[in-house]
Image (tube, rainbow, N blue to C red; front, side, top):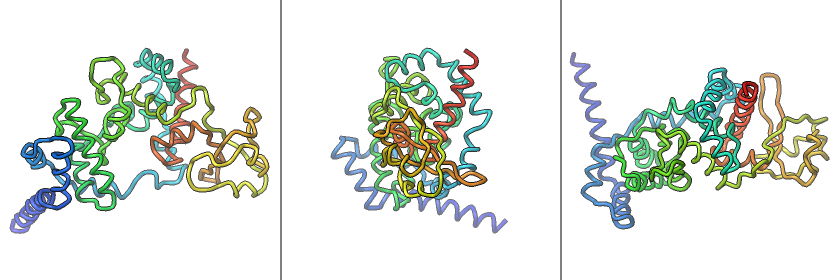
Length: 326
């Protein structure tokens, strides 16, 4: 029993320390000062709020192992599943009217919006188990590497909950503080979230129509081109194509330049069109793809080329099955 008591005591001590750490650092006091002086929050109320906030070790652990570290063939298998394709078709049926209206208004295809929500939260089934307040505070005050980013998000979160009149302790999200069906960070919510049904609330937690319109708005504001192609699988002769492989996802070559490196680009693409050559690791070598402007726009949601390709391929599988039924 002695051992258990001391473990319990150590746990109590560590949670108290975590609480104390959040309460009295320069960084914490600076944050409070900023919220009070710039945004007119009540200091006593804010300090009271933070007394209920917990620094969470599992959040710090999760930050160190993102899924994007996997090779493509393993990453793809997480998302290109029967359950996720069928779930997307079901989501389309359940939200037919909103998806049609949003596609009409914003010009973003329904299947792309569905695939984003499918990859982010399995169509709203997994929106996160951490209190957003805990996640952003943990990463803002106890994860120095990214503290600047997460303190900005914490600031935006407190403004968002004040704007929307929500209790800051009531919302759950991912370990990084991403929220709702589309997993928006607070700054994205304040910039892009849409009130589709005009009820004076932008509700990406329970209102799928608001969530659908919010994803579309995010894409449009990041220069989505209506009717634009997204990506093509291509082949190449010889090794010259390797010159075109480089970091990033921004289209940095023209289709003409890529054809000159013996890459077989589809006939409908004009030589002057901008594209990015991307290589994806499969079990038996690599697949080559051309990412066009709209593929780059998908990466504004998550900068990983693996993520954008998963969104694209899932969207195609969902659309194919949906169209077969209609």
